Image 1 (cartoon, rainbow, N blue to C red):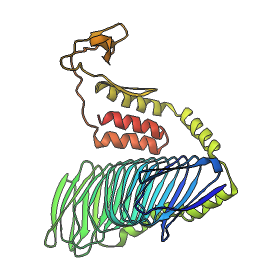
Image 2: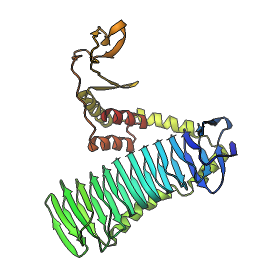
Image 3: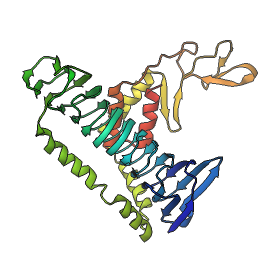
Length: 400
């Protein structure tokens, strides 16, 4: 076990890279305190006002609340709380909890993400599992593989989910809301709500019992003003849409909320206890993760092949070494293609490559990934059918 306490300048940018679990909290102090299992698993470096902290085992870290922080990577679960400045988070292999923060930008979470008492906007690119939050200001997430449960939302929302969306809007004058869901959508609005509802469903029904209005429609689109009108609340769902202004959603939300935060109760103290007891479970987790990947079934293989075919159609290849893309010749460069497919230009330098049977002079058109494609990959990640690294490679290729 190793514990380090040292002064740190609150204007220094801190970058964190952790192989396993991370508990990060902001405190009313000017010291940085780090605790890890093994003394040689913690590394510090400082250069021109930037501090980098690396840990190859679980890390419990306390920083001044004013500290600007970037969590570049956490291989396991991560719990981040009590920081006054906006937090930047790269990749989290497991679950992520954000509590009492001024806002955050999150790139990718392999498991679930939970939010509690966030006073600034939380921007999330990709989540493999569910998104659950309470007392949040504003949330924007372009791809959530599972369900979304948000309660007491005060600001704007822009959400895409592969599953259901359950939502409670706190304000009588809600901000802009845009939701796209692969399942059902249930929303509780304020009893005196002022908004313009634009509701679309592909295969379900639309039911309304709020703000003195009732109705049920089997048509695809319904536009309804509430009160004096206001910002647009736009809902697009594959399943049913339900809008209410009473408490029917409390039981549905509360059960998911309790389940989510039961997992985080005492996370920081438990992690510190594990560190102090030097319980080295990293090798066991790696072993089971490897076994889980090796035991993926035929259904997984077919889904991956489907994704690969889509990449092939867009002129991309996914190999052991990553993504390779067919490139057209650079203008003004005269190159010949040899038997191996490499294109050589002036001075016999390799300037690209072509697969056998492909036309070297015709660029292959590419297109952006759709929300459905992102969600499909994330749901496979949620079900542990592909690893975080495989999901990242596929998503990166689809978006080029």
